[in-house]
Length: 127
Image (cartoon, rainbow, N blue to C red):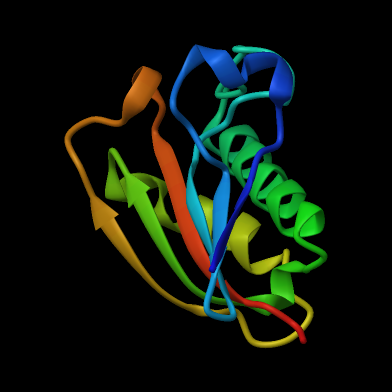
């Protein structure tokens, strides 16, 4: 059995995007970019601002599922430049109370909507 999690019904008809899917005790979070909830606006004046918005979006997905950042077990970070690595890593690590989840960081040539950062994740559901 699986359950889809949607954050923004207002924009739901805009694209076939599901924020996350719960299946077999895990929450699979779609890649999050720095969009502002309820709008199509992107927060990316600086890479720090972009990282903060991405992590906020992940937090909102987790919260809707009844979870927190500390329930994440695996993340994938996509960057358009590895020059952003230290800044993104600092913002990312600040979200966790304990050890952060396993992760990899991948440099890519481009991301949707011209953003510099996208993060996806897998969380363990609490039973």
